[in-house]
Structures are given as C-alpha cells and as structure tokens.
Image 1 (tube, rainbow, N blue to C red):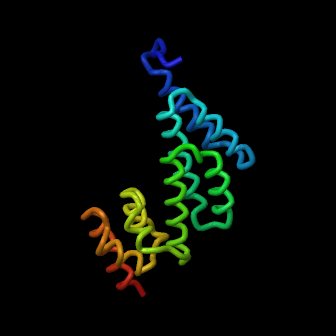
Image 2: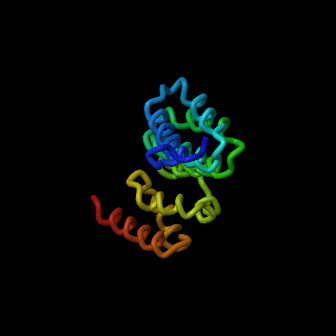
Image 3: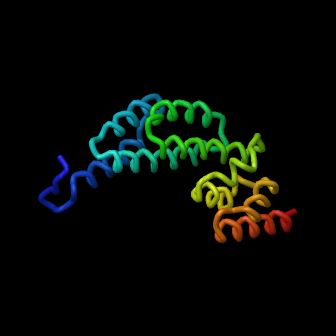
Length: 159
C-alpha cells in the first residue's frame, strides 16, 4: 500500500513516522529484530532512511560507552546487505576510535565521507589534535577544514 490516504499523506510517510516511533522506544533485546523488520519494507529507500536515522541516534547515544561495540556488531549483521547503512556504522566505529584515542589511519579519515568529516570536527567528543590537524589540512571541503582549524584553536586555548 503506497497510495495516499484520505488526508493526502502518502502511506510511506506514515510508515516512516511509525518506524521512527517504534525504533525510538524498542527494547535493546528487540532492536535487531525490529531493524530487520523495517528493512523488509517494500520501499527500500524509505526503510534505509528510517534505519539510518535510528542508527545515527543510537550510535550518538552509545558512542563513548561500553555497549557501543556490541551494539555496532549486532547492527552490522542486520544491515550487511545495505551499503549505505554498513558504511555509516563503519564510520561511527571510526569516530569512536578517534574519540577514544584508539587506532585509525590518515587514509581512513581522509577517505571517509563528508558526513564523517563534518561530524568529526563538530562533535565535542573528538579532541585528538592529530585527527583535527589532518582534517584542517586535508579535509574534503572548506567547511571541514575551517571547522577543524577552529577546533584546534579552541583546544590550544583551553587550559
């Protein structure tokens, strides 16, 4: 059912909103099953969008905590057939590594998506001067390079 309802709202808009509501309140133990169910929707673009928003919200909540790795592994198994969602989870894991002082390479940072680079320079969790310097010099966009430079200046000025 993809046609509009009597009120003119397309059915996929309604399903998208319903998925987002359900994903927001799902118990951790049921999360992977619900994500898998959403991904079976006939409108794959809409389903990917709903799951993508959910992954971004949950990853941001869990980013520096101990449950992130287990959660990311479980979600990766569920979304493994969806390139965009798999890449987004991989980039959240890279962001976590940078934020927590883990291992990462210059190639991973400079080869990451615009989304990753913007998120890395605007989130307060990334304070690694070497990562910020790399993005200030080699970020893909002027916006990223400028934001990374500002973050470096802020870090140098803070006690």
